[in-house]
Length: 144
Image 1 (cartoon, rainbow, N blue to C red):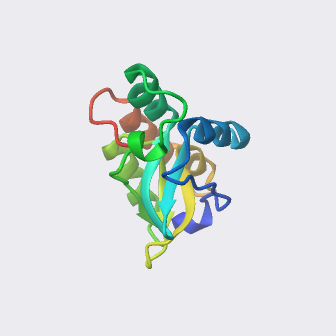
Image 2 (spheres, rainbow, N blue to C red):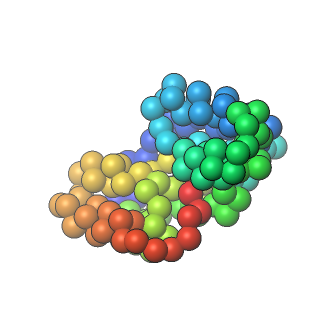
Image 3 (cartoon, rainbow, N blue to C red):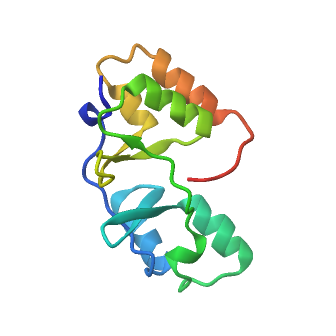
């Protein structure tokens, strides 16, 4: 099964010039803990609720701090035509719960999450359990 068959396609994109307060409001509206950050039709980063807590609030940065100042610039992503097993392995290895999905022209077309993996018709529980196990193992750097 391909990523395109189970990913979410309704994606809200943050601007790097938004305030973290605006980004947090957007996360609340869509009930998500992250937003991809785009500029000039390109994905340039990811902003998580953890980025806001650790890189802004814990550092005494105010609510008007720009997204660009606290986002993760290294974006781990997958392509829409990739196999779900390889994506689950990537998520596990990089310890991320979700990945932006790009087409081969490197345009954002969706998001795939651990929940999407577990809901795929092909998943017998092993793929999503293995990915969750890797993501949940302590260690590694925080990237998104």
